[in-house]
Image 1 (spheres, helix red, strand yellow):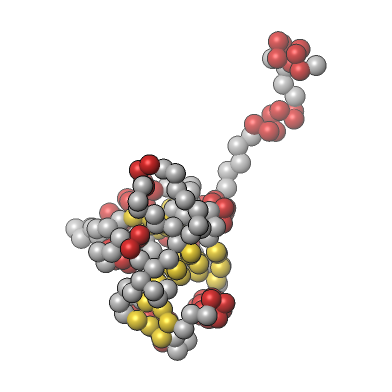
Image 2 (spheres, one colour):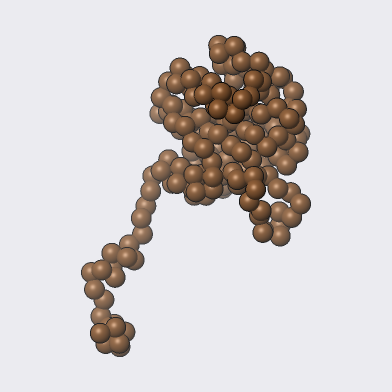
Length: 193
């Protein structure tokens, strides 16, 4: 039967169904790729839920201190009485915001606003990222355009992305040789739309 299908180019409804492209929303696409890469995702609809999930992450990992340089996030830590170190120390988990969440591949984009002049590979392996649904963009190009638009005249430097959320997994891409930016990453995604 397959022989005749190929010769006469006969297609069945089953073949047509298999060929249909599935289009996901930005948030569904991001979450799909993010979790596929090993990221840990917590969806929050209120600040109280963010604080509760943050406390659970700290308890789960036996962390009693976080590194944080973002003044808005520092105020969240004070509400929960979490010890905050205002310098990016390698041994202490980092609590930070980000620039954008990239839907087409599950990456998280950062800049000097979050990392100062530090390279991702030089920072701690443990990240907790606070982001909002309004930070979702389709691809890296839209993320870069968003940074350019948001920071007219004062574009941040050190723009980079975490692409892998499994520490033990090695990246075979020769362009990344010696520059692993794999992180054990929790994402607190806050619904703001």
